[in-house]
Amino acid sequence: MSKFKLKLPFKISDLRESIQTLSLELGLMKNAYRGSGVTTAQGQLLLEIDRSEPINLISLASIIGLDKSTVSQTLSQLANHKWVSLTENTNDRRYKTIQLSDEGRNLVEKINQQFDQQFEESLNNLKEQEKNSIAYGIGLYAKVLEDLRSPKTQSDDKATRKRSPNDSATRLGRGIEALIDS
Image (cartoon, rainbow, N blue to C red; front, side, top):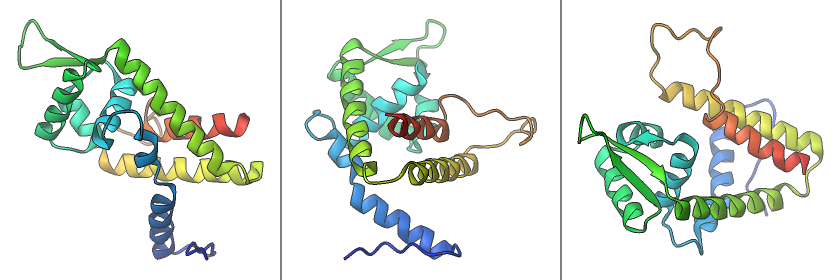
């Protein structure tokens, strides 16, 4: 019997419980990395490097929401496996540019294929309108969460800000739209 409750009008507690249920039921992170030889933390870094490269440690830690030492330790593991390359800046040796290696790109492609398959299987029994509603709602919520976490500058103006083609809401929307179109 499902614990999921689909009720209107909307309540914060219902949203929170639905997200908890969604996280438990999908188990996407664990399953998508299974068989790929990476931990969840390594997989998250690889996927973000793929979306944002070239990137540096400080930016990567900020995007992922982890401290620099944790990200640095995980990057060392990725470099040891030859999945990423770390290139020192000639002007400042403390600053390193992070990029995927060819082997890392192949691994990310494999992980993305596993994610796509899991999403496709989970959406197969829905009508197109339901898929569109899910894509829109999750994308909107991801945008709001990202905006809350991102520091705002004085030049930020909601009317003039543009969404990056690589921000999480845009990526999520593109991924779900691709599944809907297929």
